[in-house]
Length: 345
Ligand code: CP3
Image (cartoon, rainbow, N blue to C red):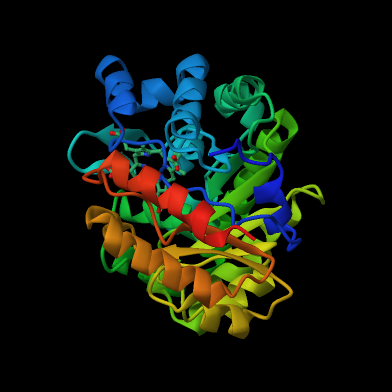
């Protein structure tokens, strides 16, 4: 493989023709990778996020191992919740936990403003180090959680299946919900703007749990705040707006903002793109579970996605959600190579 043309990913975000379809993978730095596990045997997850030198090293691991066309900053969407004083922990088995969830209008209104330089300056330090280490081989993507996904962690206190507390809160306390979402939109906007100032060349807004909402609830309770976060960003830096299970919300997510809409595997990429209109780029959308199958199956599904995109400028290949930790690294490497090879023009 020749080295990736540095700008291929950014060109695709801008819907310009590229020599091949660029690919990067959500959660490309993570537990499926032995070099990541080695790092985690020495540092806890939060400790690693707060150690810019180590976090920059982890950011580069998939670039070196897989040959992807972009690096994604190693950090987490929940880091900005810690300075809100709610008590953030990552437990070994159960994922993230908030010790003091926000369950009343008073608690929502009391959430403090966050000075991101003070609170998460270590992330910006990681960005600067990773950019330097990448030396423009591939661009660096920054990211943050969208206001709804952050609010769902604040209210539920951890992962949830039905989001009943969140949905009850937004209906019963609409004004306090608006105050909390405005606060989170401002934190997200400042967090992404800080990453951009430190050197990221594109950003992804993760609305991971937004697929739990009806289209009208999305428009009413979420869209204005995602728009507010995106509008806080300087022009010229591509924004990828991604939701999981959000096939029913795509038009509204586009209306909220983003140069690229991230699709999961529950939609056909070509059909979703036609619905969105070809004046926006798309990213996706291989089911990450396919990477557990053999390379023939991976090739078939990847080819189907490329055919669905029909070589149109403005497709960034990705998974529809993060890589599972059970995934063999060789399968991921094979996917990257086959997407480059099958899409070469
Ligand atoms: O390579 C990358 O994509 C970079 C890093 C990244 C992480 N988290 C590191 C991480 C990114 C982009 C995220 C985003 C994130 N974090 C999201 C949105 C993406 C998505 O998957 O929907 C969400 C919802 C979170 C919150 C979060 N952080 C959860 C739910 C968990 C537990 C996951 C699990 O499988 O246990 C985390 C922890 C986390 N963040 C890990 C990594 C590599 C695993 C932690 C570990 O090393 O033990």
